[in-house]
Length: 298
Image 1 (cartoon, helix red, strand yellow):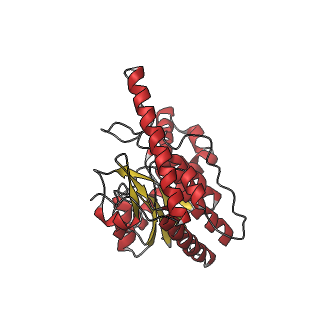
Image 2: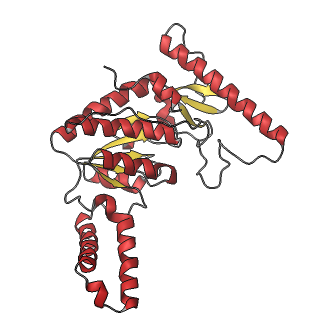
C-alpha cells in the first residue's frame, strides 16, 4: 500500500516552490518546471523520497530511537507541536536556543529549574512567599515552559530531527550535523538539500503542505510504536491562502489586501490560471504519456 499519493500532494499544494528569482541551484533536480514565475516541484520525486523517509523514520523509532520535531516559524508551530505530541516525540516550536543539542547538559539545568518551580507551587511554598516573589516565579515558569515544554522529558539526545525549512532553522541543522544526528527536512526550492539526510522536496510555507508531510512522518513513528496511522486532515483552506503570508518584507503570494477591485480580479485570474496549468503539468508527469515541456530556468 502506498504511503502517499501524488493527488494528495497536489491537493495540499506541496508542488508550489518559490519565485524563480529566489532559488538554490542545488534543488534543480527536484524541480519539474516553471509556471508564471513560480517553480513547480517534481511530485514523482517527492513521493519517492517521502516514502523512503517514512521507512527510515519507522526503523529509527522501532529500534528505540527518539525524534525531535523542529518548526519555529509562525505557520508551522501548531503543526509541529500537534504531530510531535500525537506520535509521542519531542518538539521545539519556539525560537531555537543555541546549544539545545550541542550543550544539552546546560539545557537540562534550565529544565530542572522548571521542575523545581513546579514542585514549589505544588508543595504550597507559593502561599507563604511574598506576593512580588510569587509573581517573579510565575514569570520565570512561563518563560521556561514556553521554550522547554516540548523537550522537558528529553533526557538524552534524539536519534533524528524533523525540520521544516532548514534554511530558517540553520542553527538546529548545524548542531544536528555536528552530532551526526539524522536530519529529515521539508526542503523548498530556496533551500540547500546538502544539509539534509532525508530530503522531502515541497512547499514549506503552506500549512496544508506542512501538515501533510509532517503528519506522514508522525504516522511512521506511530506505526513503529504499534499504533495505527491516521488519515491526515488538511481542512478546507485554499492551497493558495498561506503561501508566503508570514514572510517579512515581502508581499505575500496568497491572501492580500487589494487597493482596487480591478487589481483583485487581475490577481485572482493569474492564480486561477496558475492552478489550472499546474494541474495539467502534474497530470502529464503522472501519466508519463508526454515528455516534460518546461525547462528549469536557471
